[in-house]
Image (cartoon, rainbow, N blue to C red):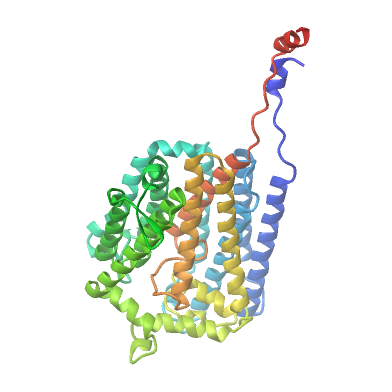
Length: 470
């Protein structure tokens, strides 16, 4: 066989990988269809309304699968099905809440959901799938993004700063200045800023990790970093405090600083950075609760939600969500048979409480397990890929997904103060959903690079004959 023939031979795909993905995607779609069936029967006693939506959703997920099959054939076969399952369940719950508002249930703000809310979420899903495909097509290797480290860092900071610079009429919603509102169009730039900043942190820390890993003084058995190396973490902390003060956005501030601290720990393997980050976080918390009324109110309703008029005033949303989940118990009331519409903004910030009420503790734990599997697959890609930048980026993206779920679920269950973040893939809203699909696209690309077999060696026929003659 000639060298050219050997070179032209394709590397065979691992058996069953894309077939496994397709099978798991089909399983996810069956679960979504069963969830719709239960919700529809619980609401009206018959099937109505959603089958067309489920069909459109299935077509979108099949398109995403074909894109992965074409542009990332070696990727983890579970990333896409897990994301599709969460997205589909979110669409079913949004449709269920939309139908409650249409039927005139006395909910708070759910009645404001238009008849096109489910269609809008499907539109956002389509845009998210297009964004995922764009990532796979344009980013052939994740390490290409390292070239744009500082550009993406600047873009991320600008996206975070824009809402603070706009007047309240164009950025202020429900106590936080985190939006860009132009006419009937609105976008939450912080959702995309965290992705850009994850790339920036990965690129920066890859080049600076050797210096940041150097030890200074040893205090109580912990090797602290040198004083000269504290600059980056102090800048990140100051930036997160500015977000909190000028935008009163606890969630984005926590995610921004938590992402940096986690990635600097992963890059350096120094526990001292975690301790320093925790200390700065506690100091910032004490500072902002004193000088920022919005943050102080969040801590008050966290500690005393049922005290005085809190339950009917600032803590009403939290109390309603807690009572709904308590009413659901272990196994829930059943999809379509609860009353989650009594919780304000249940379709966005508190959608997890709707699942907790109608699916119970068992269903809530199942959702957390799905998120946990998604994070685990992302971390698995980080462990497998050899490129340091891709490794750090995959770990950072996986961590920011885990941290966002922890912050929102911890807030609605009163484990930690409420922050107002959205639940990835489940909540109504375009910015969060599209950003989540971009995140999955990056993890798929990194996973594909990690699992891709090494190139086959090219044998030179003439050289082989010389060696044999010798």
